[in-house]
Image (cartoon, rainbow, N blue to C red; front, side, top):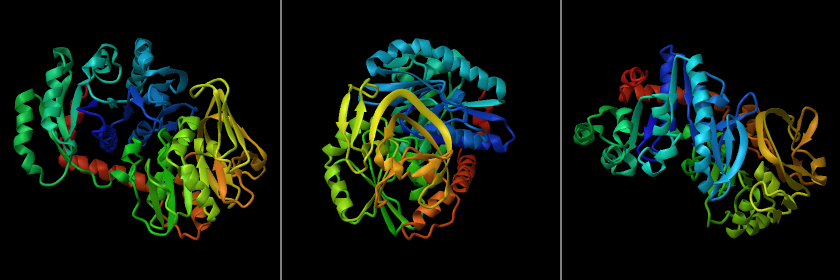
Amino acid sequence: MVQGAGSNVGKSMLVAGLCRAARRRGIDVAPFKPQNMSNNAAVTPDGGEIGRAQALQALAAGLEPHTDMNPVLLKPETDIGAQVIVQGRRLTTLAARDYGSLKSQLLPPVLESFARLKAAHDLVLVEGAGSPAEVNLRAKDIANMGFACAADVPVVLAGDIERGGVIAQIVGTQAVMDAADNAQIVGFLINKFRGDVSLFDDGYRLIEYSTGWSGFGVLPFFPDAAKLPAEDALDLPRRSKGRGLRIACLALSRIANFDDLDPLAQEPGVDLTLIAPGEVIPGDIDLVILPGTKSTRGDLAFLRAQGWDVDLAAHVRRGGHVLGICGGYQMLGETVRDPEGIEGAAGETPGLGLLDIDTVMKPDKRTTRVSATHAATGAKISGYEIHIGQTDGPDRARPFASVDGQPEGASSADGRITGSYLHGLFSDDSFRAAFLEGFGVRPAGVSYAATVEATLDELADFMEAHLDVAGLLAAAR
């Protein structure tokens, strides 16, 4: 199990790289994360939800994603509450203060999922969440040492030297944990080093001496990390290096499934900018994307607080295009109603009024993989849906796409404003090419899936060159 001396130390990438390294050694390997907190979810073949990072790790292992790989997924809807997904299905929505009382009920399904993976594979590589140094949360923990001790899984602690203070991160983690938890740790590694690694030799030895743990190496910063789907919205690049079509995406407070943007960011003919809170939408943008969100009405209020509604109106007056995806699609309409209070307080919020549609939130959640046909170009789309809410209105007569012969999404009369519930659409090379050609952009002709696969191989090579991968795999029981 790879645990972190803090959040965002690179655990997801480390497990993905180890999955690929193990697979290339002929080991039947599977990833696992007991509890994840992310609004970036993937849909499994059976229509369940897991964290996007576990879907990437499954790809690295040569497997289809499965709900057992991430049995508990928390999807934040507000600053104090989240939707709780258990073994792929929505269980409830809880305030953070109430989640602790539920944890004892979640350990059995976590251990059940882990046991199934253990029975089906030679090796299971586990990713922790946050840090085991959060000992105030240890009593009911299912994400780090609580799981590791219950399942008797050896732990490797990863520290992030890019943050600074990595010696204190690791030595301090040992200092605050009790003896039983420390006994689960078999060693440590350092991640994200920049520069001459030998300059850290003394620090590395000091950690070994102070903790008594074995070191598995120092991993330099992996330069192609941005080519892999990001787990956290904070990891999204603020701007791609392409030139040509100018696309802006709004960084909503509850942005969800933001990996929709990754394939666009890798197109040299696209200049993709993430508009941060407090920034204005530039006047020379060609296309504005309203991404998915875990709280449509909440992020409508957030959008208006940034003044982006005014910027969008000006963008449309100048002849600009707008694409709304999932929650962003719902925002484009006249109203968003939530009579049952599914996403928060019950009520109704005016939409942006850019499409003649209305959305009503419903308790049933749609999670499914989808094959569709783009209405404007005839291009095929392989994507997925993951949303609550039903949308209807006159502009649905001009659909974005068709699914099984039925209209999907909506468009304005002039075709400049479009919305769709389809996620992952730009990962489809044929659709992305057709979409960009509609804006006069010649696509690079690179397969996004092939790029991700090649990057996973490069990551495994990189880790083999700098870490004791054989020692890490041998630490498994």
